[in-house]
Image (cartoon, rainbow, N blue to C red; front, side):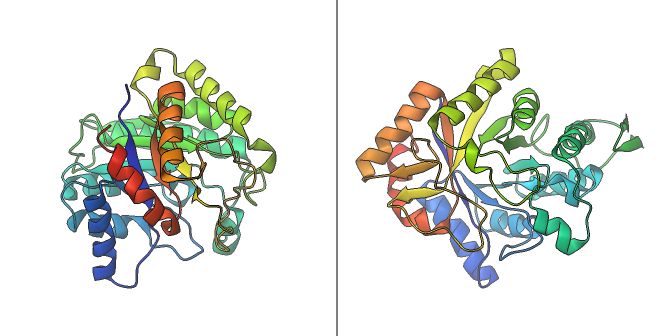
Length: 303
């Protein structure tokens, strides 16, 4: 039976001390991972510095991203940054990686926002580059988007063969890539091609189950080694959407992304999704839900 694992997205704090206190509270409550997002707009810390600070404040808690936007950094730069983070955290880094999707990030920074197909293709090459540079010895790559010539970066990550790699998404191309290449697959809603937000037609229980089937089919004999997860965007009672967030919870009832009800109800739902559908990694998307979710983590963290 798959072990439950729990993460929480934390976006910012008022000071370094407040950030360290948040990390230590998560660790003390039994959470497994502190995660930060990666956007150029909005009230969020930059990930690399924030993760280094969180790791230095804790001893057990893993740190990671949900997710690095591939288009913001060349993968050789990201490989160097993440290898360094893995060393500084004593091997506690999870690398979440996505294409980059929010159009406003691109528009305000003057970056070219290309089609989903191009961004997924580029992400696939980036994954190959990351794994190559995290490995031993010099690495060369001759792709459509990236070219490297015998690059041997130091340091190498502590975790071998590489840090835990998370890929997430809702569209079939992203899910198939994640099933083939990731250690962790985070299932969510498909994003509109124009980058304006989640595709509201992609919600609901059946759509979520269809994504699980896509992952299972694409993973083949890798399936039993995959960790399957999702982001929980409503806990306990339904709350208004955050004004800064692109999350849309209106279509997610009857999926593990919306967990309404009593403590007992939510525990039963989590066990159902793990035992019947192999979803074992749950990430609290909003800090406002931590108080409601922490007792659930305390009950299930060892189960």
